[in-house]
Image (cartoon, rainbow, N blue to C red; front, side):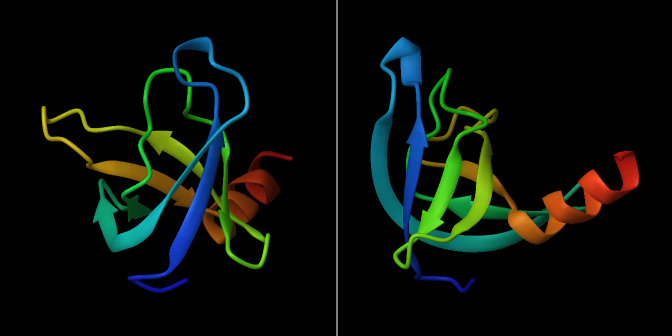
Length: 91
């Protein structure tokens, strides 16, 4: 994963099932000791928890939160490698 990489996000914003949005990885951030992908694909209520794909069709993350700072187009996803670690720790 790298900044500028094209991505696709699948979610259910406001109950509209299986909505696909495109965008870019616009940054790789550390927030509260967690690595997050900053993405330009919108993450509206109902979209979080959807898969984030690269253009090869590989799942590279899970959309997590849209902006909580009243900023437009500030959306985040949890990288798949971070999710793998969390799943191993829990299960």
